[in-house]
Structure formats: structure tokens, C-alpha cells
Image (cartoon, rainbow, N blue to C red; front, side, top):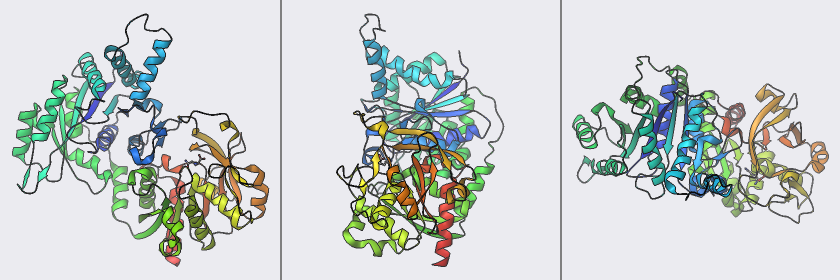
Length: 538
Ligand code: GLN
């Protein structure tokens, strides 16, 4: 029997209340008191993982070291805690059912009728306890996606009910996140939706131990008393979560409200230490008091939805704080560039980032943006598809291979400078089959990459099917685009640079996934610095 304690976070009233940020903030406070904490997200949809989802559906797909394609909340967990997550930290209904059905096909249920209760709920319970059973964590926080009362999340809620009963009050607790809306006509905060959602939770046999109330206005003492009375929680367990100007303020806000104290008390842990948030607060200090400002154009095709490039935006916040500058990221639709507004839009930028992506839409705009950055000496960072676009642009406009392309966009091009990887050629299933997770890269000395990392062997996370075609490497290098990072086992080109340009870097991997508050990613830090230097001279 493990001694790990379990915290479940459910949500009521509305989606998008920020369960992930509350879970990450509580985890941060507990970590800052010395506990080993991890967070898990249970997603009620039927996709096996979010890798097959369009970013417009659920935002960015986050990739872990072990190559899991996961919900973007795992990105918040890593950024807050500076601890890696893995496949086990994100579980979906699709994955649960797939595993139960596979067991059924193998005859593991010995002739029994396979049912939601107990077979699906058992599988969920196993997935939750799998993390605790590693012995690596004192506390596991499990966030249940969706809103209480949804048909889809019922098996999860039932699994939580059972686990809570099995583990006992000292080993498990439930935090319910709700909304306390402000009705401007009545000039009042309203508690009724919270009362109803606590009641819905109770109908499933779960009593909330702690209420975290999202609100736009402070909860008065009377209101806290009322919520406590009607929702069966102690008054100290009514926690207000008021809108914050940055998500990085939330741990301090939760500290002030005593979320960590009441959590530990309910778990029977006697602990009077104060969380050590020194480094966190140093970061906040730098983030909130920038000495300068830069503007970076983020060229992508999912720019309408901020969540599509979540990790990139957060990496800029970390790198901005490190450089003590405010980074204004301007989302630019690659199709707008195609429609002729290139100069007008890009001349305001101090730096250009071409984002990752898939498919043909908007790629000509990305290529034009690369060309603008290259010809005008604007600092440039290309990530994944962005790096591939940089290679295509150079091939077309410097090597003169006018039809150069990626076979992803043009399968009949005479010059496939970006080509499907050999290992991908026989793959037919789309889910979970890209080149994923951490791979090594050998960095050439005396290059930007080498200066940035200070090492000759690095490891970064990946998510792609196409690669730089080595058949063009000699020509490209001769013409001035150098391959400065190479996978030592496969020779796959991971980094390209143009030494004649002040700061031009394209990377096949995704540095943004590894940037955290405690460890801002060196490539973003260096890019922001280059952008700042460029802006100063402009
Ligand atoms: N579509 C490209 C590939 O599969 C790039 C992927 C990405 O940007 N993540 O190689």
C-alpha cells in the first residue's frame, strides 16, 4: 500500500474556469514546501490522445519527453513545477476503452460481461494510482476534465467516488472549482450556480472538501459563510480565485487564500513550514518590471486561437523575464501575408517566428515571411514547419530551385528539399505515429546553436513526419545555409543557420515544450536578446 495522497480537482458551472492553473498552482505551493508532487489530467473525450485533434478544437498538442501527445494543461504543469510529465499524466476515455477492449479480446475477463462499472472505472482507478505506485510522489493531483454533470465524465466521477472511499479521508480529497458570477444589473455575486453544482456532485456520491470559486469581485465574509453553509464545507475551505493579470500570479493568490494550508490539514499532514517561492517571485518581479519592450511577429495559421501556440507564448514570457523586456507577440495570419500585406505587417516587427504546423494552407505566406526576415536581417526563429519553410525559401530564392517544396505540400515537386522520413513511409495510421519525444542532436562548434546551448550534445522534443532532405545539404551549405545540429544516429538535420545573417535559426524540434519558469529555454532567451539588440539599432 503506497502512502501517496491523492487530490482530485473537479469543475462545475462552466468550462474554461482554469482547473489546470489551479491544480498547477496548488502543486507549486506543495512543491515549494518540499513535497514531491505530480499532476495528471483525465480527459473525457474518445480520441486516444489529442494528437489527432485540430488545434482549433482543444488548442496546442503538448509533447512530453517520452513522446506522448497530450493536453496543453500538461504544459502548465511542467512550466510551473519544472518536473517532466509522461504518458501516464494524461489519460483519455479513448485510451481507457482501448485498453479495456484489448484486455477483453485477450480473454482477460474470463467470460465476464465487461461493463462501465466495474471494468471501465477499475481501469480509471488503476491509471490514477499508477502514478502514486511509482513511489516517486508524495501527492498526486488528478484533474478531471469537463464539467460535473456531463454524461462523458460520469465514469471518472464514479471512479473518484470509489477511490476516495477506499483511500479514506486522510489520503484523498476533492477540490471543486466553480464560478460565482457577478450580475451587474443586480450588482451582486450569485452563489446559486455553485450550490447547484455541488449538489450535482453530491448526487454522484462525492462531497467537495474544498471549494475554489472563480470570481471577478472579492467574495465578502457573508458570502463565504453562505457558500460554506450551503455547500457543506468549512469556511476556511471556501477559496476565492479572482481574475489574475497573469497565470503566474495564481500560486501567490492561492497562498494568500490558504489553499495549501487547508489542503494539508484535510489530508492530515501537520506542516507549519512556509512555501519557498523565492525563485518564483524573482521571476515574477522581472516579468512585471520590464526595462524595455520588443515586438515579435508569430506567423501561423491557427492564430485566431491563442491556445494553439500556448507553449510558444509562455516560452516568450519566460525569455522576456530573463532578458527583462516585455515581449509583445503579434499573431500574424500567414494567409494575410499571402494576400499582399507583407511589408506593411512585417516592418513593425523586431523579430519573426514562423510557427509549427501541418498541411498546405498558408505556407506561401510563411515562406514570404522567412524571405523578408532573411533579406532584411530581422532576427528569425523557425520551429519545425517554420524551419522547413526556411529551407524551402533558401532553396527557391538563393539556390534558384523555383519549385522547391516539401512533399507534404507538393508530392510531385522536382526538388523535394523537405521529404517524408524513411521511417514514415509505410505508416498508414495517423495517431501517435509521428517522430515524437526527445532525441539527441549534435551541435557544431562556433555556431549560434553552440553559443546558445554551451554544449555539443543536446536533447530536444519532436513532433514531425517530414525532414530536411540530405541530398540537398551540400548545395545548401555551399550557398550559405549551414546545418549546425545533426542527429548523431540518423544524420537528420535538426538545426539550420545562415552565418551571414545576424540571427537566423531554424530548428526541426520544439524548444517551446521545455521552457519553464525555473529554466527559461536558452534558444528563446537568445532569440529575445537578438531581437532586443536589433530593436535598439532600428
Ligand atoms: N508538418 C511538418 C511535419 O510533419 C511539421 C510538423 C510540425 O511543425 N510540428 O514534418
